Length: 64
Image (tube, rainbow, N blue to C red; front, side, top):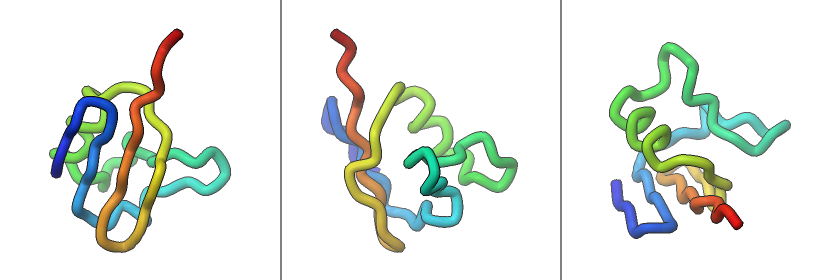
């Protein structure tokens, strides 16, 4: 897992929790990996810039 200010890279398959309808991860699901759940919640509002069976890239949404 790597965090570079505006980007969070998680090297884990999170596709089972990916919701295509709203383009978000369902981090509230009981079986969501706990360590990644904490990191994503603390990262804040995000958009998914890339997701695959090997890794997920989240980009922080900038507030104006």
